[in-house]
Structures are given as structure tokens and as C-alpha cells.
Image 1: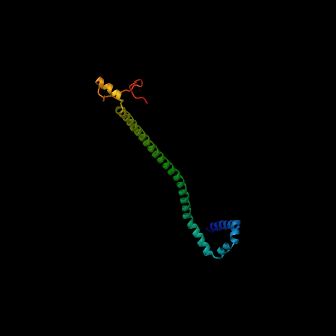
Image 2: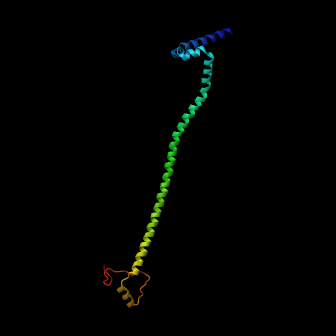
Image 3: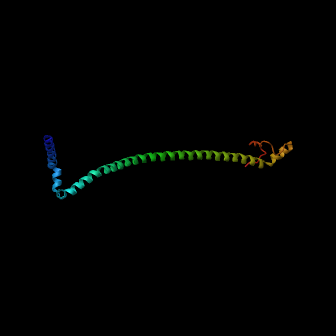
Length: 158
């Protein structure tokens, strides 16, 4: 057992020697904080335990921050895509509705134009045409509107 213990002690000593000869460790130990921790081993041990224990929560926090940042970036892209898709569909529906409305309004206006032109033809039939039709025995109101021939000399001209 003693040989194994001596071997372990030599390994420990060589590892400590490597740490103490490291240039970063030497510069830290020569600073005021390093001198203070060298003079107060309990504070150094407490600080070492605190750093070791807090490493896991800090690592989890950093992983959480990085993952939420990535998800937020991807989420913004996804949300933007969804908003653009929904607004595109809404625009398509509105334009389709406006197209149907314009067809309906055009139909109503066409029907109104035909009805009014027919009524105007009935109401403003020239007097000479009415007298001619009465002389022939035809009634003024026919089932179809009278056909006005532009070559007819009995109609009113401008």
C-alpha cells in the first residue's frame, strides 16, 4: 500500500507543480486577489465551491437563453409566414367578394338600363305612330315594344 500511496503522492505533486508553474496561475497569485485568497484559505474554498456549484445552473441558463433566442428567431419567421398567409387568404376572399359584388351591381345596372329604355320607348312613342296604329286597329300597348326604324319619316328627328 505504501508504494501505491507514494506513487499517488508523486502524481499529485507533479500535477500541483504543473499548475503552480502555469503563467496564468503565477500572474493571478501575484495579484491582490490572489494574495488575499492565499492568506484566507476558507474564503478561497468557499469561492471555489460556489463557482463549482453555480456552474450547472449558469450552464442551464445559458442553454435556455440560446435555445429561446433560436426558437424566437424561428418563431418570428413562422409567425410572419402565418400572418402573410392568412392575410393573403383574407385579401383573396375580399377581392372575390368585390368581384361578385361588381358582377351583381353590373347585372342590376344592366337590368335597370334595359327596363328604363323599354319604359322610355313606351312612354315617348311619337304621336304620329300612335295615330297610324289606331287607324289600323292596333292598340297602343303591344306585347313587344315598337321597333323604331330610322328610315321612317313619321318619327321625330332630333
